[in-house]
Image (cartoon, rainbow, N blue to C red; front, side, top):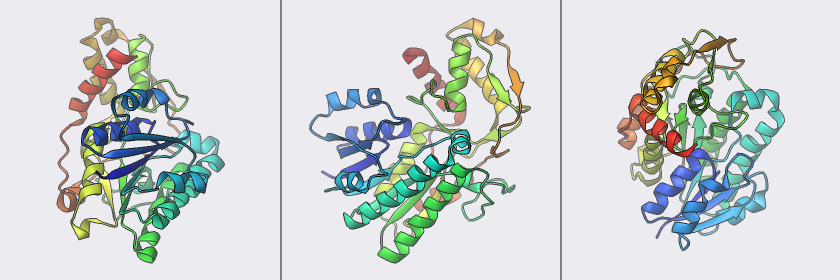
Length: 323
């Protein structure tokens, strides 16, 4: 049985990866310090898979925690990070410590632990002020936030470790991932769970700017597929690459709110009447984001199953039943 370390395992993406891996007969080691992750995301898995799930409470900023976590592990799925552009603007030092120093610790531990492959969460924020659409992996701009800088530095470090130490590294540039277990209550909640929570409470969501900024919203199951392909590919050309991880479809914030009202109104007709407000644009935001996913399709065989609207129906159903 192969063993996989998932860092940030109690978070939204990490816990979904753990669930998928365990259901497909992998042994899973979870590392989390619960700074943003929730133990509630792991408790059902700990109950269901006591023999194949190991939880380590630790911090990637501590190299010894990283070394302990990679013991006898075949693969690393590195999801641990401090997300959120606004958080990084408010506190760049902590974002840097977790996302860069912590990332480097994990690379060193994985190298020394002879891990077969290191797959890590990169970010579409790396495209920065590049105006070209769709976004192709080889063309990026200047980062627009401390968070974006940290995620770009991750890519540079992974590339250097691959060249210098012969490691196998694959970066996945996530584009606005959403779905079950994404927290609507945090201070830096992502737009979809935040708007769902507001609409369910008959409160008016506030759209930053005129609502014509657009994003390539990507359902969690597509992200799981990409991680599994990156972990299991035997194509040598596919390794030591960075891939857009998205659906390849653009949705404006105005369209998003209308889709959400449409989905939620099936559960509560009053939601269709909730008014929408507009506020100022948010500092550090990229105006438009649309991924070209041709590279992932060609080298990894990626075939995303969920469009944004299909994923939204699944996500809304989960929120309706769970919050």
